[in-house]
Length: 60
Image (cartoon, rainbow, N blue to C red; front, side, top):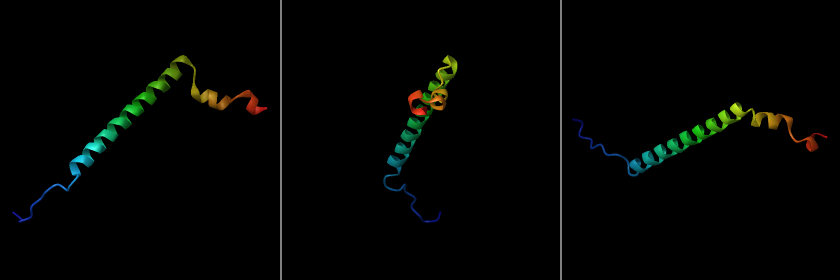
């Protein structure tokens, strides 16, 4: 026994809850982006190709 009274900092629970919410949102975002990329790969309608080719009127 050290004699110290250990208590969580005020707002610690709220901060941890917000952090886990943020992590969950981030995971969902990554999951959604990965699915979107997979659709592009499967269909051959690749966003990367569109970006590389660009619009003809801009290249002229």
